[in-house]
Image (cartoon, rainbow, N blue to C red; front, top):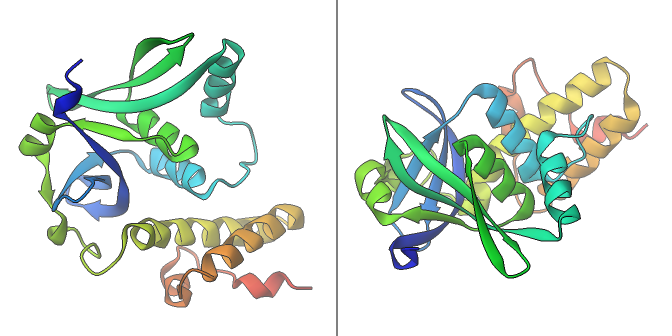
Length: 209
């Protein structure tokens, strides 16, 4: 395996780009970020994993991780190792009894797993050279830290989920979401984000009753 050519990276931000929604992955100490275009549904799944909140129903990634664990394995890392016909070639790398097992995966799947398990994303440097974009060109990117970049769409997602839970009178779920928003609020001011949430937003303290 050409490990010397792989760059350790992390999910840096989620933003709108010309072709659609993009998750930007940024190698450590790099001025470039790799855009990975995914569907709106995949964006929601990735946001759920980033927040580590309990989804209303078990997700397929939970089943996969439970299966890996039951087979006495563990997820070691995920990789983006090439490009074919305009699509990233990705794999998850498992370790079982000291042996590595590589499984081909969709880009959205490795992003969900990385977010859920906080495992590293390794990008082949040839992929970064070919498709990387300057981080400064990503909207909202240069002036924010990596955690803040991810936090913006996460907060919007949680606010919309909170409003939905209140509308359907699922107050137990709403309380969980309120607590998650409260936790995020201790790391920075995001009050202005609620103004742009689709369909409006419910302030975290409105569930205090």
